[in-house]
Image (tube, rainbow, N blue to C red; front, side):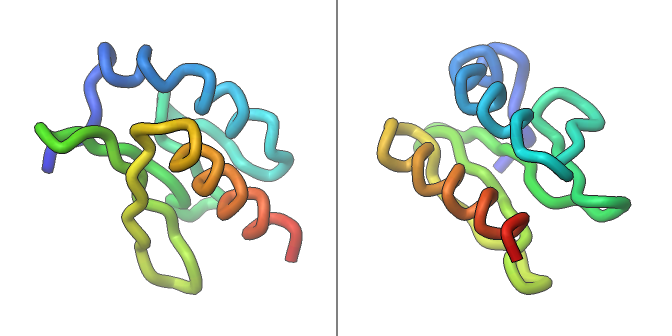
Length: 84
């Protein structure tokens, strides 16, 4: 699974805009988010769609982000990580 390209990033720009609003989450490169100095969230694409890898409890969790429902789940997971 390859890292996401610019065209695919364009297709999830509203999701990226919502992620940018989370206080404490820093976008170092478009679609590559850090929490403090640690990688926290990034995206991949393959023929099955677009996926996010989000750090949860020290492990990477892969989540599909192809539908509004899937994107909402990712946003909730990211926000929850910053509400602790």
